[in-house]
Image 1 (cartoon, rainbow, N blue to C red):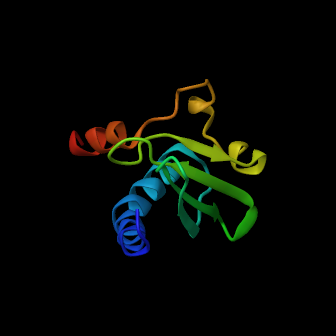
Image 2 (tube, rainbow, N blue to C red):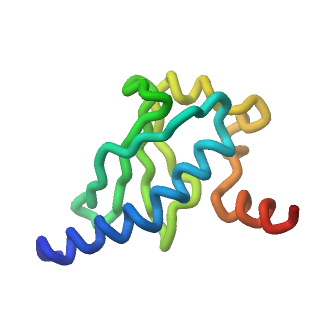
Length: 108
């Protein structure tokens, strides 16, 4: 991937995936006042990662991996952010994916 292609890919990720990541965080975590994005990288294997933090607290960081066409659920996080996970989603794999959240919103 050349530099121009990489820049275009990063712009697309920012426009399309950041809102999905924010939706996921706001739905699955308590007390989210703000979501800040700090960096978008594409690792050597071609997997995009979007980094950021919540509530103006850089210790409550996340790294969202986009492994398929769109971000769904792959979120690495600090212990501080993990402590904000809603109790109903504490079981491993219990957090709702963006597609599940959107389907629920559509059915309201």
